[in-house]
Length: 134
Image 1 (tube, one colour):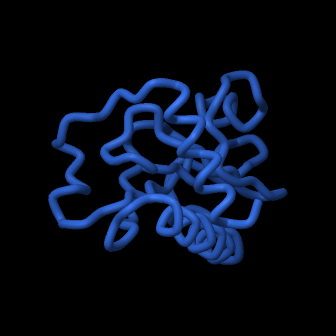
Image 2 (image 1 turned 90 degrees about the horizontal axis):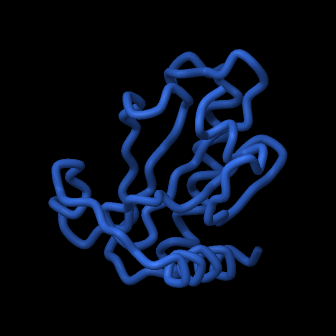
Image 3 (image 1 turned 60 degrees about the vertical axis):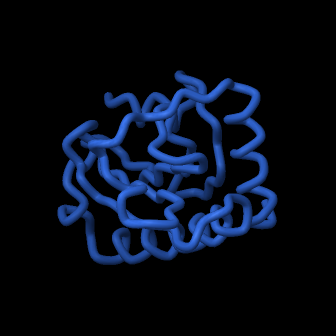
């Protein structure tokens, strides 16, 4: 079981942004930018590790869910765009990074990660959820 499955199951706390029956979105605890959110599918065993191993309908639904989350991020965090990254090497569970950006360099994974106080993380998560109408 991956750390993301443990987060989905509530075994590890997270700063939840949005959730439905198939997907879960939560703040990255070591964000590149304030509002950096991860979108993961809720998968039965075995967990899919590679995004292009998902069934077509699950992949398209994930992108639509991520679009809703990205709109919430854009409404809650000052940025020009919300960038999307799918790397998939860090955790062996399909996931998508949604990162608020104002310039290309904002999305570089070579950048130093932020450490934000838990109160600020909770505030950001709540702001995004509210911007989504959740």
